[in-house]
Length: 357
Image 1 (cartoon, rainbow, N blue to C red):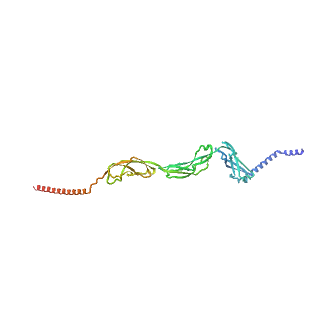
Image 2 (cartoon, rainbow, N blue to C red; image 1 turned 90 degrees about the vertical axis):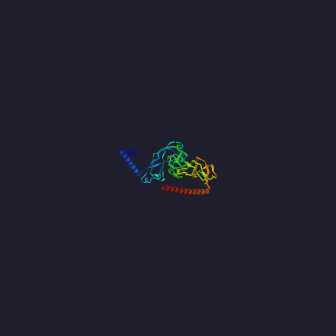
Image 3 (cartoon, helix red, strand yellow; image 1 turned 180 degrees about the vertical axis):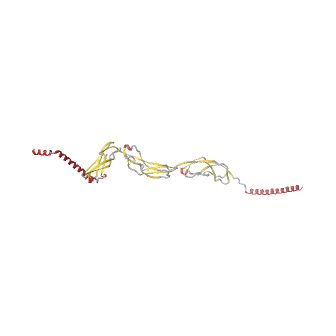
């Protein structure tokens, strides 16, 4: 007992000083230890493991801050790509909102460091999830501009016509197609094929085939109708020994064709005609009216189908009778001239006789 009492008395002797020394020693140890360690912080993307039946639907923390503490000499070799932060949705089977812990995975070489400490902020994130859904979306080309005058887009073919999309049920229910980037067709006159990408959907919807997609645009001339009015019917191929007595009327016609061709086309004077080559005797005939136009146009309407013509035979005088007539006319003319000269002489004699009297 005496020895114990003596030890206790020695321990209690100057105890305030001893306590202060002990505290200082602890602080010196802590300071020394802290001088051997360093800290580094990294901002890392937060990966979402979603191999199950749900996926996130709302915004959540996309990054986390990781603080690493290790030996001063070793910490300089720590890189962000050696550390991964993630949350796991694989065990969730119902729609809802969940507070999920952030899991940290480090590379094997970092685990060999001693000491090595790692912390993450925040330690958990709030995530709203929904069941995944699959849907086929129609690929819709975005065509802008106007093709050249007189042309039109007659067909558009997209390959693939549909693409597979997956995402939350609520998001997919609001969308039926995926729109491509703009295809400018201003003033084009020919069909063409375009390789075009799709506009991005929102970040929570995923497309199996993101393109580019093939878009074939078929361009053709437009069809129009045009009326040609007041064209006089022309008689053609009338045999030489006949005359046309009738006055032929005027006709109208309507043609159909492509705008580029028909807008520039004009009929000529003989585009509407009646063929008289079959005439072999005089009389009245009803003959079909012919409309002459290029074969790439279509006759839509015509005002006259047939026309009635009156034909007379030409009068031809015999050649001999004409010769005799000319001879007689010449003889008469000579005798008339002779008589005129004789009368003039007689009048002159009479005048001279009078003067003389």
